[in-house]
Length: 62
Image (cartoon, rainbow, N blue to C red; front, side, top):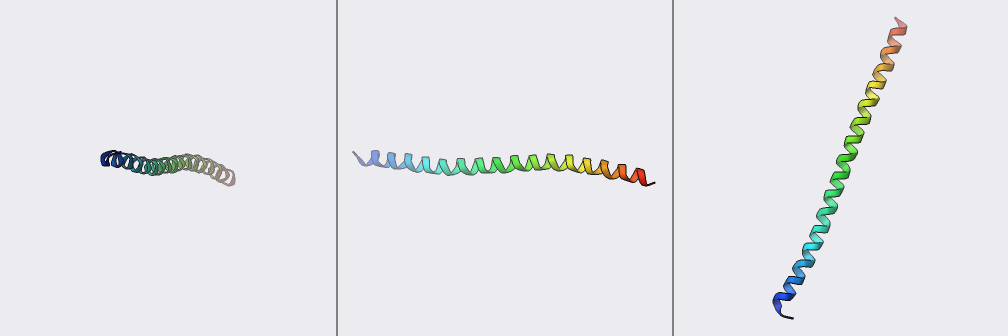
């Protein structure tokens, strides 16, 4: 095995390790963004439901 082959193998291993970490970070970020979107949608729905409930209770008191 010559020196170039060893460096090629080392380079491939290093590239795979770096890619593994980058993909983990990317999926973590995508999961976080997905959760934020779901929380935002649920918060908007809850906001409008509460708004309707309070508006209805204000109408009955007047």
